[in-house]
Amino acid sequence: MKKFKLSSKQIIIWICVNYGLFILAFFTLGFMDSNKSIVIANFILDVVLCAVSLVLNVILFSTKYKTPIVGKIGLLFTTLCFAAFTCYAFLTPESGLPPVLFS
Image (cartoon, rainbow, N blue to C red; front, side, top):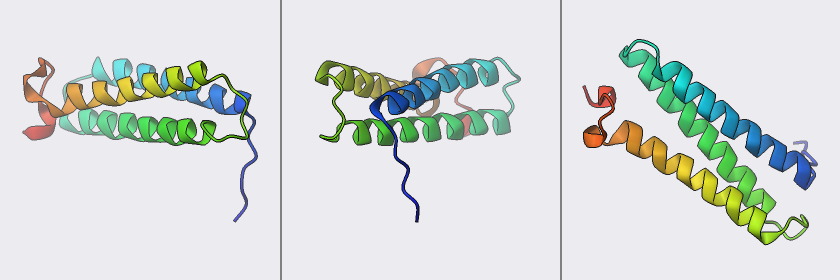
């Protein structure tokens, strides 16, 4: 299997692209009809984007990347905040958002 050689700049760009896609997908699909299939697709897409961002963050913490530790921790914290927001928005029915996943 072929390994990808990414620089720290490319990893940071991909993490930021994932953040942008997360925000775009959440609000675009969130303003659509409260159809259960759209909400489930939005949830799956958000979870996949958070997982990919988390993997990229773990790769960025490798010693071969010379990124400042404050930047690494900031990106990891942002990813964890997006993951927590996804759990809050979709998995807690008392959050005020439609608990469509449980119906």
